[in-house]
Length: 476
Image 1 (tube, rainbow, N blue to C red):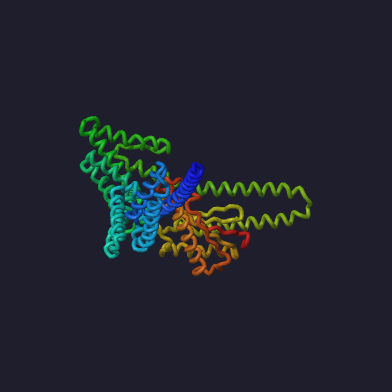
Image 2: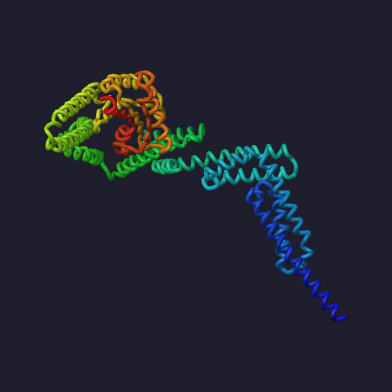
């Protein structure tokens, strides 16, 4: 009898171990089902059924760990399975019913609204959560209405976040300027700052993808606000009698005086700064032309040095080669004459003509485009018409139109804009000057090949250019 009881005990223990192993496997499966629901945002889009599933699963897991009879846990496991399955089914309906809302949520998330506009983000999340609960209750129409409200809130959160990203610095400086009484001491500068900031906001309100333009306007607002702060600081010192008007005038004249001395120009400030400023401006305006001329002379000298080396090598050879050499020198002389002829076709403010070996570079300084535009206006087309004579000097030469921008704005947009401008010029040359398309090519370099600094307005203006490169080897 005792042996029979021992056998029954062993069988009971074996069955219990098997049941425990089975429940452990079920627990792993349910945890995987829960993870799937979580990854698909069930906590937001099917919150009630998901939460019931979590509670049932966690209670069953706790009882299993406490050593409760494994066979009694089956109902709780089944409850968790049903709730998670229901949550996943609701997810499919929610993703269909809230399609536009979820797209707006994705856009707001990409703009980091959760960080930059936390209050608006939380409002939108709460609205979507409530809409999902209504959908779980079976009220489809009301759920769709609530989902549309949530979409509008996500849309607002995205816009607030974008503005925060691009306008926070300007807004902060405007607040500082207000505390410094810039409206009183620097009304013009603070007015410019306020207008630029408002225009940046309006730009984003109209089209939130225009971030490059908004960033440019925000930078202008920040500059003017800083300027207003500087002026307000000086005005406050004058008011407190820390500075006199004479102190201010003498301080402002000193940099002009030093610059005039450096340029070896007289610095007569007895009647104000206008004469000194005009004299310095005259000198500075000569710099780009002088630099271009210097570069051209450098290239010409390098070419002559190469010719001299070739002459030295060839004159040391047979006498029979001298006639061929003379013909080659004559051809080079003719090529230099052709370059000179092209130079004479353009004024200094229309094009700078550079030579690089057998290539002729026409830097079209007089060819201008509107901001962000690749459209040729009448003035640009008139200047391009002048290229006809230059091309005729080198019949059959190939032309490469190169577009360049300054470093302002988005680099990818700069590259695209430079390509569009180069293609616009190439198309005009083909369609209006009759240049065969196989002789033409267009390429855009964006802001990757500057010829001047991008910190000054003049430098940026020089970098925004069209270069037309003629390869004279194909049509000398």
